Length: 396
Ligand SMILES: Cc1ncc(COP(=O)(O)O)c(C=O)c1O
Image (cartoon, rainbow, N blue to C red; front, top):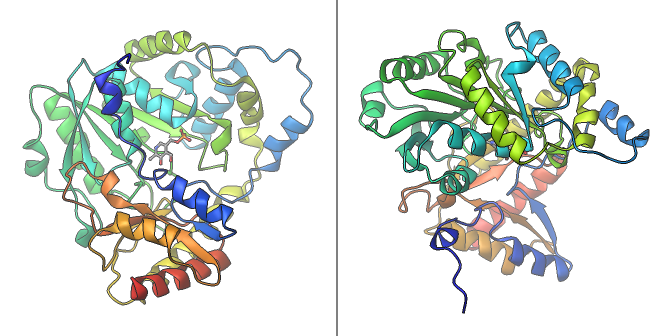
């Protein structure tokens, strides 16, 4: 038998998708499943994007430019400038195939093999795959449900900095916890990065979804302070319900990094031409689009939070942003519970699919009693899902 690589085995399955085979069997049996496991928004993509597809003429559909289509880079420059980041020029932007590719490229760009990147667990599980593919070690610092998964003290973080540490990677607002870091926390990280000469990478793909009138503190606000060290990862997937278009960005003022990133980008030729042509309309989206979407997610968050708190022995901190929360369940093994929901439990021939939270932790003993819930379903479906969860928790 021909052997495949050992490192292939080390790539973990996605906790978000690993129960899919059980869901498929249930669906074949005619069971309706409410998908609370994955962050694929149900909100309609802006019509200005769809119109481009409806009027598509270009034939053949060629490659795009490796850095990004010039018209799209210009549109993005305008987009960032409208946000107040007047210093962002096209040369500071690399277009990628989703934020996913952006993170992977950046890990390659800032780390030598076996270098370390600090993350805060629970963290977006796919960071594991990007780290393994790039031969980078993620050093996870634990954060706790009781204080809404906010950051530990500077001295605690500094304990994890070694000679091999190259970067701190945060996700703000956070997937899977819904935490939005305060200005004090961002200041804290900037100071640590400055003191120890580390890259500070912020995955801001949920930047627009911050609730309770809280303000999102972007690392773009600090990038001029640490121009060589701060890198922002961005994506249109969640903001504009554009997950299938696969468009992300790296934003950095470090020209050497951007030059290297472009060389990597040349190797994969280009991001999708159709996707970028569509997204050139980014500045023509009606002004109220994002505020309406945010309002909708905030209402869903409120509904879900109130509903979950009423289920006996189910606990959570109120999520502050993105569209996820980590929920503590009265079960010993949340993965078994999630599987049982798909294989055994039905309420009027319906059930729910959740993501077991253990896969968002590096420490194997953490998250065993937790699930991640994504509130990407409409309010009626969320209400129904809450009823199913309440009954299931009692029955299990
Ligand atoms: C925190 C975070 N970063 C990055 C991504 C990647 O998204 P995409 O590749 O669609 O831009 C996701 C997707 O769920 C995410 O949750």
